[in-house]
Amino acid sequence: FGISTYLSSGAPISSGRLDALADRVISAVRTEKQASAKVLVTDLDETLWSGIIGDDGPDGIDYRAEGKGFRHFVYQSLLRRLKEEGVLLAAVTKNDQAVAIVPFERGEMPLKRSDFVAFLASWNAKSLQIASLADQLNLGLDAFVFVDDNPVELAEVARELPAVHCVRFPESERELPELLQRLTVLFRRTQTTAEDRERTALYQRRL
Image (cartoon, rainbow, N blue to C red):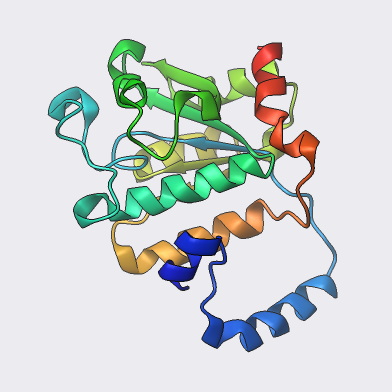
C-alpha cells in the first residue's frame, strides 16, 4: 500500500509492487467472479472520525490528515471514491440525529451529508436500522457491508443479519491497508459510468 499514490491518484499500490499486483489480477480473472456489494453502512464515532461526538463535541473529534485523525481521513477518502464509483453510503449510529449530524454541517470533512443515501441515528439496535434500510432500498442484505470499530456492535449485526459483510475498523495505522484492501475487494468495479456517479442522488429521491 502506498499512501502518497493513493491520495494523489487513487491507486492504492506503490509503483514498486505493480508486478505483484499484475500477478494477483491475472489470478483473480481466472477465478469465478462474485457479485460486488452495493451499500456500505458505516459507524460514526471512532470510525468515521476519532472521538465521541456526544462526549467530546464537534471540536473534540478529529478527521484530519495528520495525528489521530489520519486513519479516519484515509477511510473517508476511500468512501468518497467508492461513492463516486456508484457505491451507496449510509451512516448508522446510536445517538440523537441533531447531535450526530453536526460534523457534517460544518463542511470540513472529506465526506458531506449529501454523500450518504441515508443517515440512521437512533437508539435501536444497528441490525434493526440496517434491515429497515434494506427494505427501503429494496436490496438484499448480501449487498450490504457494515464497518464499525466496536466488536460488540459487529457481533450483534453478524448474529441478526448473517448475510451482511461485517468489517472491523482498525485500531492502528498498520492495520489500515488491510481494511482498504478488503473494502476494495468487496466493492470491486471494472468501470464507472454516468449512471454510477448519479446512483446516490437517484436513491435519495426514492427515499
